Image 1 (tube, rainbow, N blue to C red):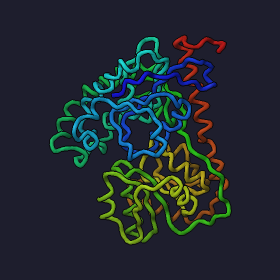
Image 2 (tube, rainbow, N blue to C red):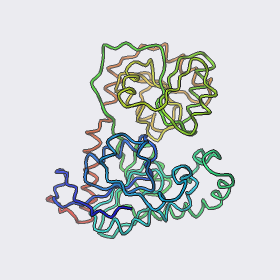
Image 3 (cartoon, rainbow, N blue to C red):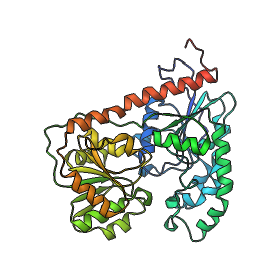
Image 4 (tube, helix red, strand yellow):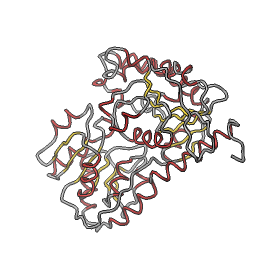
Length: 389
């Protein structure tokens, strides 16, 4: 772990020339919605170090080369990047070991869907948590722990220790000064799990100029990490069975299984640069979001490109997609239900301007402004700022 002194981060909106900020992230081993939030936070606090359990620079965009990433001791263990999910029982201790590194900070901003909020801070340091979800694997969603993700026998052992991990997780949540949820869906989950109120701040979405002269082509698009809980298998199975053209962008541990089930009308393109993904979104007929997402940034990005969405009717999609105006929902996690939604989708004349207008509610500028309001609230709460600042 690096020992470089923490330099002040001084966004003018805070009104403090000596504000010291630290960012904490679960693990930097993939690039998804949580990492897009982290990018937006680093733009607000470019000098802030990023503390995480482990990192894999090859999985992150080029911008990460400028980040001051400080890994935990876990990163030095053989096989940590491959079997980090199998090490779940030690994560609370891993993040507690950052205590000395966080001393002297004014505020620590946690971006987490698992363990990052377990970091200990002093009573004079603010702790703000942007929560994508309380840890799904602790509170009901075991897809994260499927056998392929860990050595044999580990899953059984982990089930036995979940009770203790949940108690530790709730104690850590009590130490957070303010929670932010990435959707109303997640805010309700935080209330149920931690008995804590959370302010809703939707994740940041880049809103490029709308290319209104581009005509959609005859294929659908999925952009996602290829992991079981995203349910990309539903889209691949439905489109293969019914001969629907589909392009799938992304990589992950389910990729081999998805390639095996893909029919001739389904293309798996792997991970692509952002500019190529943006071009695909502009040209697709519609975007598919087959899983229940905490929020679902990619569905908003598709709407920003003027394209409607076919989504499973649960989770964050209920907040980002307007049925009949910017997309349609399907109600059952089956290929048949998804196919029924595709048929309904193809009977509607979609207005790209309406989809774009809906997406503008989720801009990065809006996200950063609302984040700074929460930062200020924590600083006032800790009396780091005075009311007149």
